[in-house]
Image (cartoon, rainbow, N blue to C red):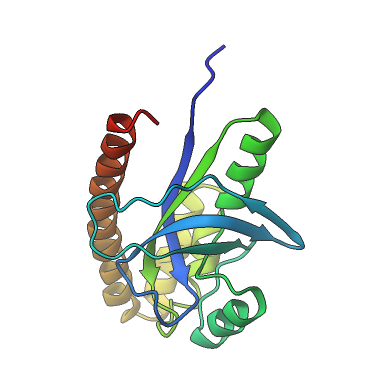
Length: 178
């Protein structure tokens, strides 16, 4: 019964190009998955941020963790960033005829590696299995605790920055009558 005027797909993404840095907010012009490309209705806006790159994003089915794989994906697609969700949201919006805007916070730049087993951790189907996997990971390699703690701290900081950006973006849109 409710018909939104706009859906904003917001979250984290990995950088695929050198100009995109950790902590940047990227406005998604189009999202690519497999051989399909969906244009999004992003308006140029800054959401109060000084530097807001805009460009394409590629959605993949598994976490891209190595700098080599990220650079290769960036070269193949021309996308600025990679995530695992935006295409599904944009596709559902397209089917319903609802405009979609993509906003992503860069959690890791193209030259930054993520822990290789992070993909396995986030793909566990339940919280119990995630905790069990994390505990096993830490028992096998206790130094991982520092890496996971840093990821958590960065995620909290980036979430706060993204929330502020989105509040400003929505405020700008509502004052312009969008």
